[in-house]
Amino acid sequence: MSDRRSLLVLNGPNLNLLGTRKPETYGHATLADVEAQVRDAAAAHDLDVQFVQSNHEGALLDAIHAARGVHAGIVINPGAYSHTSIALPDALEAVQPMPVVEVHISNVHRREAFRHHSYVSAQADAVIIGAGVHGYTLAVEHLARLLTEG
Ligand code: DQA
Image 1 (cartoon, rainbow, N blue to C red):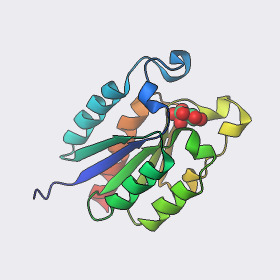
Image 2 (cartoon, rainbow, N blue to C red):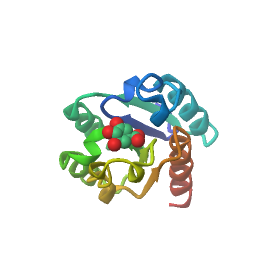
Image 3 (tube, rainbow, N blue to C red):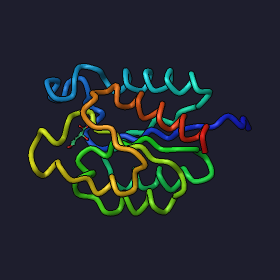
């Protein structure tokens, strides 16, 4: 087995529709484009990536649990579950001290009030909001830095 470290990049509900879903809000890049961008950013830091998208909260929980001992850090865009799920932050807390960066493509603070609070943020080392899909690259850069600096 390679001892190269890897990141888990998790995308929640509806993010499989990136590129066609509300492009004025989320842009034109598809999730496949995001995956390619994330893999390039990670490779530049000698990091592998496991890329997971699910529309099911339980599948996201299973992926977080399985990350323990396998991945060195997590990037998560929980989609709408950010605003509703207690189980997701509980799962992230359970796999601490793994570093976690939460990403939101859109600036949720410019949107409806129900998007202004994320339960997940309390378990994130950093939160990147409103940078478009570039936010995923920023998240990888930040994790790489955390993993290097310890
Ligand atoms: C999102 C913001 C959420 O409010 C929304 O439900 C999403 C995407 C974002 O990336 O901007 O599905 O997480």
